[in-house]
Image (cartoon, rainbow, N blue to C red):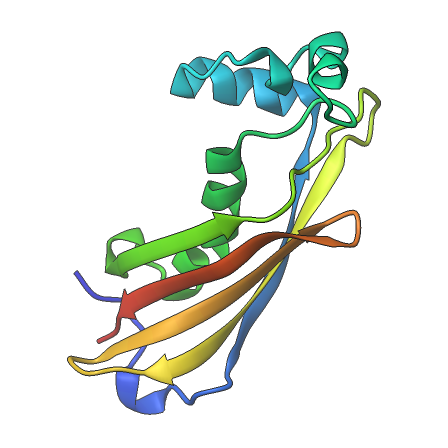
Length: 142
């Protein structure tokens, strides 16, 4: 698979369209059901605080999945992502209100690689704090 974007037309430093992803407690319950991860730090405020967290936090894999959407939306074909990895640096704290939290993601083409591939570096933040480190994807372009 490859993206509909032409490798020859992409330049290092090109910015992908930034996106914001809202997260509510309801979102976390839905994700828990889909993933099977029912750890109480993701839905039980008392438990989360008892183990030293500021409040309920989003699943790390949920945060990672939201971040890669910037790349898959840009590439059009999710199958064009051939490699993806992150480090979890801070949790996404999700308040029990109508707002919850927002994950803000930006991306930039950091390198052109062999075989018509590019490396995209992502920055994901919530509440003004970077929540993912070393977030990088390799994308197969056309």
